[in-house]
Amino acid sequence: MKTAVIYYSYEGNSTLIAEIIKTAAKVDVFEIKTTDTKIRNGFAKIAWGVLQVMLKKKPALQDLSVDIASYDLIIFGTPVWAGSPAPAVVSFLDKKKISGKKLALFCCHGGGMGNVFDKLKALLPGNTFMEEIDFKYPAKEKDTGGLKQKIDEWLKRLSN
Image (tube, rainbow, N blue to C red; front, top):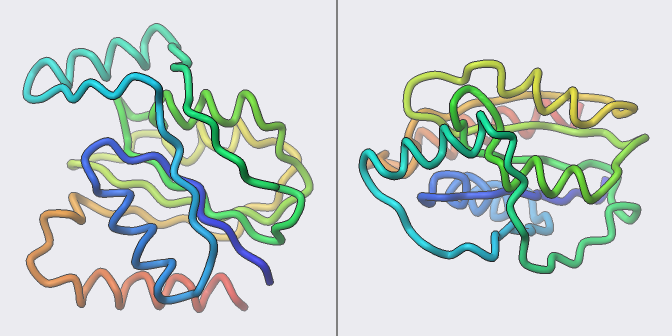
């Protein structure tokens, strides 16, 4: 099954998960990037992120050439922003109409997923959802062995 991982990462958490998946499953990986490259920290980051979600902002994205039709399974990854997918993911999904695909979802969060998976599914009607998995601050893991094991088990469920 030809598989792609498409993800957005603000602080590197989703990147870490995407790279572990890439190594474990030998899949293609595509990173969604915004044209706004300003890094925000602390309270400013939180306030900015919540405001983006609440105002339903769809940020401008850098070009991402991915032929969705050529993949059997697409794994989408997002950080959780105010209980929702990151606005960059929403913007990507708004531009790419994806249907008739097998999808799997992962999210990275700092303590709560909110309704991120339900919201992602609502943005992706007409698809078959295989599996979901969440990770709490994966980039802060001292030993990535536990992450790799969790991902390996998840990937096995996806392949069944």
